[in-house]
Amino acid sequence: MENTATITLTCPFCAEADLRSFGRNSARCGDCGAVLGGELLVTLHQIAALPTGVGRHACECGHPEMRLLPDDVYWCPACGSEVTPVSAGPTTWKSSDHSEAYWCGWLDSRYGEPACFTDNHRLAKWEDASDRLDYYRGHRAGREARLHKSRLLEAS
Image 1 (cartoon, rainbow, N blue to C red):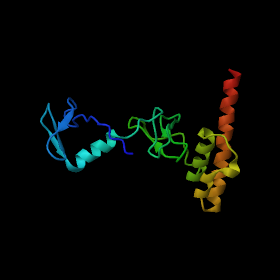
Image 2: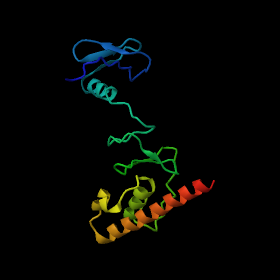
Image 3: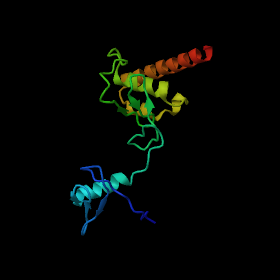
Image 4: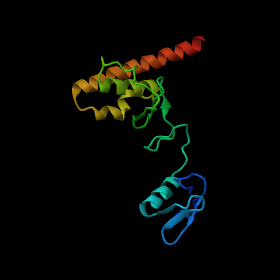
């Protein structure tokens, strides 16, 4: 059964008052008088109906929480997408000495959940043998970085 709960929408123009029904398939702001209808109103309803993210930054793929990398970039361990804040400058932690496959492997191993490499489904993304090798090398280096950090934390 579909959820029929009433969704309250705030006026997107003045952000001061709630929208009220105004005729068929339209709404009006009681404060600024703006009238919304059609696709805009449908889009606002769809946005308001979205579930609240569980973590500090949920991913568009549905994963509940993206991981914060050292340069303030959020990275999703499920799909590998990155969200860079506007305030962040260019990423400097990724050197151009390595390929994209290497860095994907590094991120998967460094920030992903520890698991058996033979069950890694992200490896299938890389069809070329050299890319698969780079992914493996990056995965190994990311694991070493994770282990190094855990050793440092244990020592302190």
